[in-house]
Image 1 (tube, protein in one colour):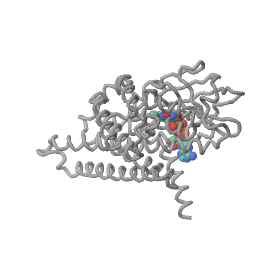
Image 2 (tube, rainbow, N blue to C red):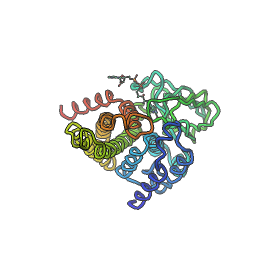
Image 3 (cartoon, helix red, strand yellow):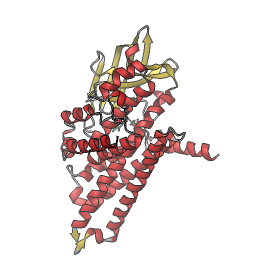
Image 4 (cartoon, rainbow, N blue to C red):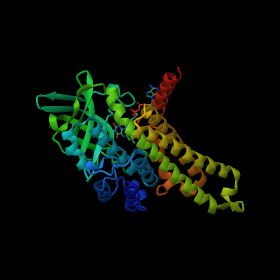
Length: 370
Ligand SMILES: Cc1cc2nc3c(=O)[nH]c(=O)nc-3n(C[C@H](O)[C@H](O)[C@H](O)COP(=O)(O)OP(=O)(O)OC[C@H]3O[C@@H](n4cnc5c(N)ncnc54)[C@H](O)[C@@H]3O)c2cc1C
């Protein structure tokens, strides 16, 4: 696996190269690059080798997400969605469904994950999409919003209501009744292919597409899949911090004002010190959360929420500091810190906003320390 990791990291860096800013401006990552990385299993690297995956630990997948996040947060967003979709299949699918879908996802098939609706953002219990089994068929009706990667996806894992509980279903993006409408001009992660997905009585074979039966507790269902996504986003934010730290140090060393490099001015040095500490601390939080995931620790959920919350908050703060250090040199599209500034802000909203994370963590602290 160590070799797999080195190879995957090299392939990623080579495939992205210096194209991230052009993709950001165009609002689309090169399809060839996305398919190439997906075909090598790099977008869901923790899928087991028996399904054609790279069999990486959470820590190794996390480091790959950090590399991706340092290069291109739009691509890291696709990686997060692919990873969550594959995890949903591993966690909720039966043996036949795993054997059918996972080898596709490690060899080029692209997936997105749809929870949110216009009236169900932070409060996913308000979801109204209906997933109704009838005999050997299942019908899906509803509208999902802000589905990352939907503009690239071949399949979408859709969560919804079924009777009193919840369930999930794998919906082919080209099935009759599915309409994917791109969300134009998002603040950040502009090439991540966010879309509204309309599902109008989409009719599927239940045995092939319905994951894990019906009537599961919706909160359990959503949390088990979001935890995977939170780890990925946390690591992606570590990558944003690394990119911002590198750009800020590079610039502060060469830009001279008042007769010396700006890094020698103490107020700029403080920005560099704070970025350095943020990167180190976020890395340690993500490492801990990944260890909890790999050990199936009881702290798996809380450590992932804490790591994502801390890393996202620090990435947003750190990217703003990096723009401050570069000033006019980093104040336009096409510069890594300008892109990071827009992308990082979104990290405080997705996979559980900062406020929702804080509520979850406060509840956890009260339970543990009562
Ligand atoms: C770039 C991007 C990518 C996304 N990708 C996906 C995806 O792939 N799949 C998917 O299903 N969804 C996705 N989403 C949707 C995302 O999960 C939601 O935007 C998020 O859950 C917040 O919901 P909302 O935007 O409706 O905000 P709201 O829920 O309306 O919240 C608005 C504000 O109120 C705060 N708030 C809400 N409730 C409380 C409370 N109880 N206490 C304190 N504060 C509260 C929130 O923290 C926020 O600050 C994405 C969104 C974005 C912006």
